[in-house]
Length: 280
Image (cartoon, rainbow, N blue to C red):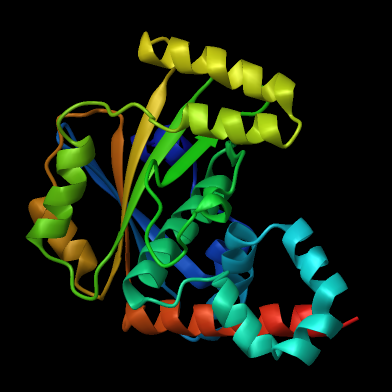
């Protein structure tokens, strides 16, 4: 069977052939059954530094709007003179510093970027920019993707998890969320409201109507669970995954020292933020 005809590809698209994910990760679409659809991702040797460089850029993009960076650049001389840049940014808390939040956000960002590369759908709103308390995880759908050209074609709803060590409990958490029945998105109106406030009222109106059609079951929805953990991830998912939802796919990424990937990516993102404000 042609890979593009597999149930994995029908749900979320083919593994990217270009971009970071093509170079950083290989994949295997494990033979699907009635109760299990699983794509596992494998890190290519020697590509960790390359991945950290790219993920750090995504961290900034998902957390901080261009307009915010432009405002900080305009104010940088006064900021640095009065407070010092490090103290000012620490007080502003533009990026999380708690390990738990960094790991959760990092997994969410990787999932969002992967699904945008694999599928024809896209993120309409970077919701982490709207978190009133960056130290804590933001509520609502982790990842929500739409076809901007035809909102009614399909929606992808993703839930991400990070664990230093995978186990039955985290797989059960994800399958309890998605594996028993199709889960519908909860954040469409949030996206609509924010886009409306940004001046994109036409798209906001369309999303409000879409939300009604989704509740009536008239819009195809794909559920994706994602687990970022260590090298035992694939085997633990395979052992414990059981789903009765035919539109649910489990995506797993098992790497050595996953906590290092996230912590170093956030450290580099902070460094890039400071350099970006200081540079002309």
